[in-house]
Image (cartoon, rainbow, N blue to C red; front, side):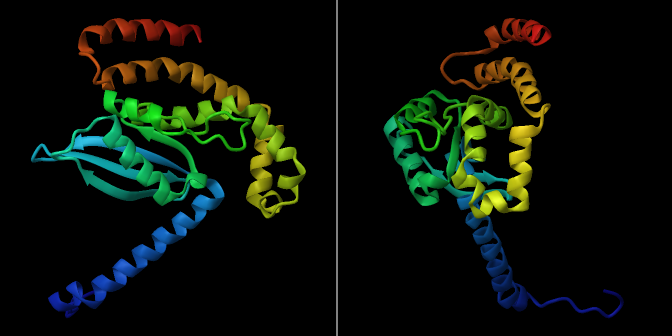
Length: 235
């Protein structure tokens, strides 16, 4: 760019250029969704109010490639109870694909927690244990993921040593070998995960208390914070 540069016209911006950008973004999102079949994704449901105080529920999918906005639901005029939220959650699960979901992270509001209990947990590859960890406050997603790794430590180690994994294309790939080495051979990985969980769990309890809509939490926060500080010191 320099003197004499002439930018695109108004009609170009709202016409062909806009269509090109929309196409590029669409292709990029499709490439991210394709990776969900390999690495899975976390579904996040967040309830909030817009500038007009209209209740909104946003659904996003997080994966190592990035976060994809799925949809936003205006719940004005709807009773935001367990049945309504469960129907919305179930639609999102069907759209993304149950087999692609690692966990479902929702708002900690009481109605969200009620819906989570009715949403069937996915129990594949973990001897019947739940893969979906529902109802944990959305601020705790990293903690939640590490906690899941620790919970399924033995199952993960078994998976990376089974014949099906070793002979698969993922097991033979560079990334697959690096991940397997971390899970099986890195002596610091699991102790660090345990340390992170021990330190973070007290903080998560306070966050859940602050984010809960079941009862006023201000009167309990200071006592809870002091209690969890001591828990962190002894962890």
